[in-house]
Image (tube, rainbow, N blue to C red; front, side, top):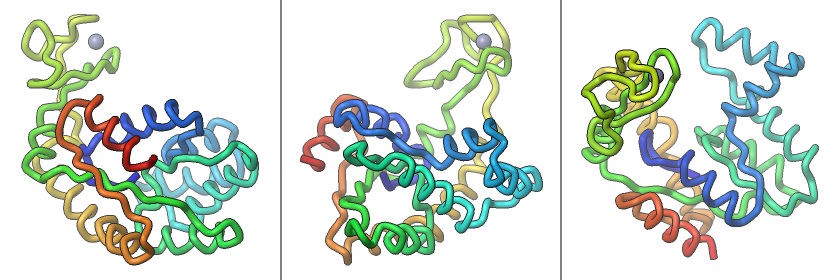
Length: 208
Ligand SMILES: [Zn+2]
């Protein structure tokens, strides 16, 4: 699954994985799993993350390949949030060379103005972590959590300056993957504007 921040990749990946009965792998989940199990890879990843440094491609790729090796025979998998760079994509293709690499890259296309609208409206309860959205899922009382009456906040990640930075990183590092998979004839582009159900239908049709 490819797409800019706020495109709804995680939500859609879960729906597709359930529909196709294949596991969904996200690099974030793999990091957490390795850290929970306190593996060597988990410790290495943590040493970078605690300094606020991006985990090097090599570590992430090793985790993904480790998962794939442990799960052969599951009939496929869906990668969500990985690869994030051309370097990771090439390494993945090399590692999967025996089975012909990944089958498809699905690009969820959403215009930037819509993405900013989505991301900048997100609110989260600092106490129970319930998520809201000023337009799509507003709380009953403005800025107050329905469940625990705590004040709602915007995540630092969703503040205007941070959103701008996330888009910039996406444009520079991840967006080139669209061309990379297009050249390989493996890209499917899906319109990511509309209801979750509608977008889900388009994705399943693209995968058919
Ligand atoms: Zn709450």
